[in-house]
Image (cartoon, rainbow, N blue to C red; front, side, top):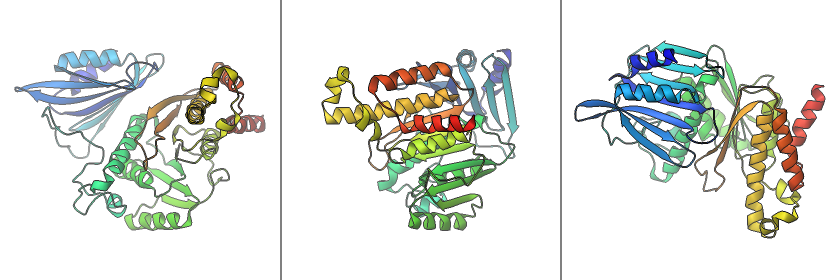
Length: 386
């Protein structure tokens, strides 16, 4: 890890702006660490904010101590992204411990970080900086202030972009990337993806938004033309039947109803998509299939059975993706349109089919007496590939 210690020594100074350590090798414990500089009584410190699935912890360390702590963290994590005034730095660590460091000079120097201890939380999209699509979608005013009734929507957009920010090192910046958004709806997050990846991060991307509602597609298409987003296209169509592309790098499916999520995930696997982001919606299929006398204390009560079925559905979806060679996380999203469905599945392709996970899936399905749509679709794909 000498390479990591060396890079940390060179960037942990007054010009450091922010950093994120992500991609944990273990599912339990700390899943992400954010790093920022701060100043107390004229001395430079670095605040490490570490997150578990339910809690956040803070510690303020000197540059030297922060470097040592981060180097230790990198033994258990796959990647680190850091931004300084003059450059962007990415550190990747393979399974075998091979370290890859990418340093990109900025065209123009950025502003130094705010070193005050009690500064407000930084968002990827900041209040006070007008963003065209947020104004037209009613989230921002002309001068960039957040409309009070849309505060949750603004937080949700930023939270979603944070999920994308974490996986940026997995996306190839040297070619055009294709992103599909199944069931894009009003497309708050579709426009946010394009703005963030193309305008702010300078990725060459093509995004296709797919939805069944004609009026929504017409409105979003007109906005894309208005903003000059040449590679943002909206199409009317159904998830299950869409075959307009041969290769897809990232698939997004947010609140696709019931088994529509399964069709979107199966499509993503079929395209060998590098990244999948999915927020499932209502889930009825397993609720009508589950039969297990041992689980009578849950099965005998409709509300409990419904909630258990939803958790089982998402758990199986995550496991199916793991089986297909994806590193899968189940993360908490921000409630959308006042719905309690706030689980996000984030999957990144990193390997081959895992037969051990397949055994886990089969045992769980047998225990519940279920045969989920996603499993059937993937089985059909496997048979067609033979």
